[in-house]
Length: 382
Ligand SMILES: Cc1cc2nc3c(=O)[nH]c(=O)nc-3n(C[C@H](O)[C@H](O)[C@H](O)COP(=O)(O)OP(=O)(O)OC[C@H]3O[C@@H](n4cnc5c(N)ncnc54)[C@H](O)[C@@H]3O)c2cc1C
Image (cartoon, rainbow, N blue to C red; front, side, top):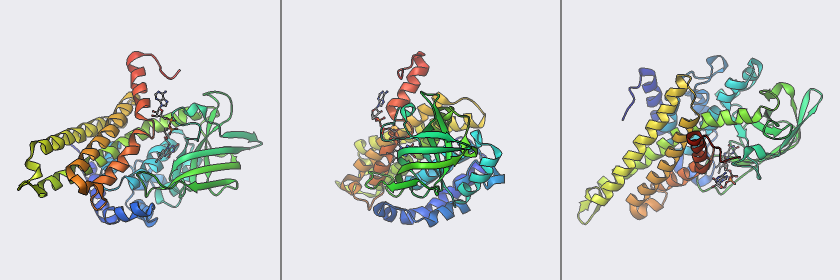
């Protein structure tokens, strides 16, 4: 299946494929084992324009439509989802949110550093006691003259160690309308971070706990109105789910291609294993998952490009693509036999990286409840 891509979209896809082959593929295993990527890759990502995808050119961004954005994330995800995720957060969760909700001064101050890699962003919503239910978050922001003082803790924050700015959600009042969003420079006094090691997948990516101890933020860095933070967060996640889905298409495709190539070259019983019907069943199921995941993801991207409402479609895409990525990567390990279990082959990492996709930016259960609420008109959350 292929949408008829235009020339520009094809160019983005080719550029991303070449970039991934040249800049990522030679290092993926080493970075995964070291639980850290080479920070120089941020410069390369900035040079090729990927850290500013879809963002305004006047702030150093790389204008592109959302389909092209998904093509790039698929290509990077097919080689290294850890690096794909850096862009998903910097652009998908924070950059696009800054464009949607920020004023010109905020955009001029923060977007250039996010696009050139000198000040990448993280998205700080989750707390130790608040995951699927973000309305229960407890980090506080209290007014002090023209500033706000932040106290609290965030956890599982992607890019948290390297970020120069954090989009932080804090409580400024009671209930769902008592949350406000802030752009917090990570060199502010009172801000600290600690790396979370030992992740199952996305090991090269930095994930951190963030601590706020009387961090002072000017009111000029408040993103959106006081009390509208949950709306900011949910709109960011709505866009972000498309990034995750596109990355999942990449994982699924990478795992499928590896399994197909291996099945053709590996012989048992005097024949390539690809000739066995049960192996062909694996490959056929994988191909269907890759194609359908891509279709639902591109549907969301083209709806965004047309300015349409996408809440349900982005949940469907995220849910289907993330579950598909796990299924495909798991089958790819099966097709590789014992060789799939060691990291000389890429499929084990695809499976480990895929596993988080049904967990973050709304678990599969949460996506199903969002879809179910739309279908029935009844919310299971309240
Ligand atoms: C590698 C990684 C990177 C991450 N990056 C970020 C980031 O950059 N920024 C950020 O803010 N967060 C990030 N997260 C956090 C992630 O979004 C949360 O882990 C996720 O939202 C789930 O929250 P939780 O872990 O607290 O699980 P819980 O909410 O405690 O859920 C536990 C289980 O209960 C189920 N459950 C919960 N509520 C319901 C319900 N109403 N009905 C049915 N089942 C339910 C869940 O589906 C899940 O199976 C990251 C997490 C990981 C692992």
